[in-house]
Length: 138
Image: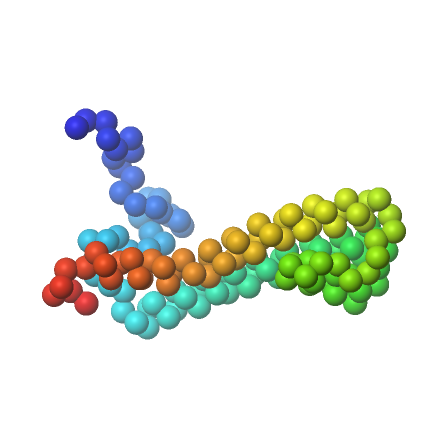
């Protein structure tokens, strides 16, 4: 069955350094990660999800403040409510503000899914990795 693997040199997903082969997760043939390293991985992914949410919130705050002319507090409330899926609080007056709110709402939905994926990726990987272990491995 020649040609099944299009990239035979690339054994697994590498994130930081392709030359050294640092991978994000262990391969299914490798042993399960120790609990303390797993907790550290979950914490790193949690921090990354927090950074994604914080950066997205900053985009919303700046957009509402600059385009709609809201105060910093009102811009923060509107951006937080849209990012959380609740909808805007203040009435929008300018066309630029309405277009921004529309784009930001769509962006926020995608950001929520990405942040949830980043947050739950290590948990899901560990769950699947346990199924691939031999009965004697732990």
